[in-house]
Amino acid sequence: MSLLIKAMDAYVFLEDWPKALQFIDICLSKDFKDAPQRPDCFYEKARIVDAQKRYSEALVMYNEFVEKYPGHRHAGIAKHRIEFLTHGY
Image 1: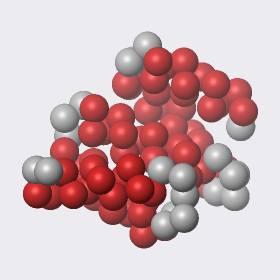
Image 2: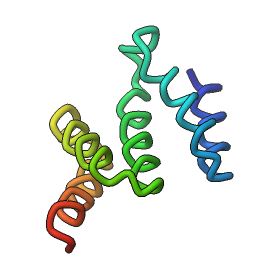
Image 3: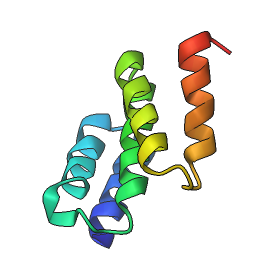
């Protein structure tokens, strides 16, 4: 799993969204359903979709992230994005 995360991080840094999303989808597959990094992958996918200006999809993903992982370190950021995408502030 750690190699998947490193590859994902590299493609995120390069802003190569399609390749980053490929690795994120592997991270989110059933093979890694119990991996501790899964919430990070889930959040990163929402963030990438948001960066691609696919706002309605990002909103759904942020909401699902906050619902599934309310205590996660990125939950607060996700809530702010939900507010901004919903109300524009």
